[in-house]
Length: 290
Image 1: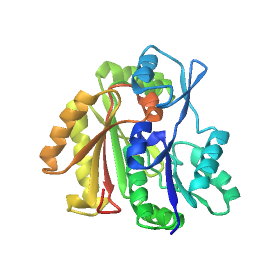
Image 2: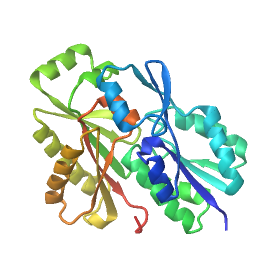
Image 3: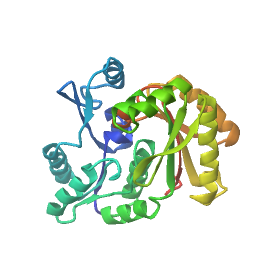
């Protein structure tokens, strides 16, 4: 039986510690803060990241350094026959396209999955890929299975401040200024390739209700199921665990009895939306063992 390694990047939110428990390998994402290079969860913790972010540090994200990624592949291929690599969505970074190009030199032994996931949905893909690998599926079979349901996942995010969207050029300064003045809470969506504006709300409470309504709508119209056992519902947050716990209680009122995961949003998303954000997702399950 082929031994298949499952590799993702730290955009999945899987920590180095968690990766050992899950048996999934994680490529740490590089960040430049005030010109200095850091690696997520290696020499940059969530706490350190938010401290630097809120103090106005100049933070830029970078795709995995080519040499580092190839070194990881070479190392894994000493112990495994094949690798399934699940990077962050190609719509949010060029790292996926670069990885696909690099994989061409590995005679089919490295299969890059572009199923356009990020954060908790990317984590789910990696966990499901691991289940399939343990069941004896080949790298290509795992890739095909993940690609088959790639569009059956949505994410909604509401931000606490418009400052970071403005800084990243996603809002004009004028719109950000008006929004801050009126205390408008935008609700953003990630569906498929891109981050888009979904709705505007006047309060955090209204923004959360908008996201809950969107999940219910997507269950029927995107995933086309009434059975909650068919899906994973998750919450993600940026340095906002208490609010995430409260949001979980609200979601449980709408989806009673459903297990709801809570995870920190990956740092590459966090630096564009700032602390205090909340996100929720609904994703079609591929296997019954997650």
